[in-house]
Length: 109
Image (cartoon, rainbow, N blue to C red; front, side, top):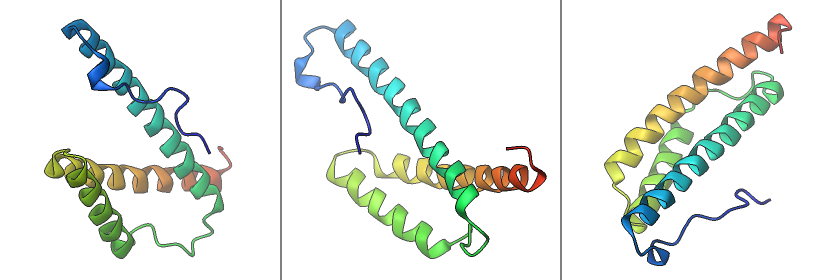
């Protein structure tokens, strides 16, 4: 499965500040594209989840956050920022899935 058709830019390829800003803009667009794909997967989960999977699974949340923080540390990304972002992403994803399930039950999706 290919996630990004255009890979992230290599910082060593840039020679001007404008080039760097263009690279940052590209990464920002890719982040939005990836978040869109992630929420499409959450929507798919809402369709497939018949209620057996607990949306508030704290054990899964802790495991994912631990793995994400470890990966951030290994790649030199601020761990606190990543942890805060993923906490909010988890909360938003759970709320999004609940809303999608409600729409499905109401026949609106």
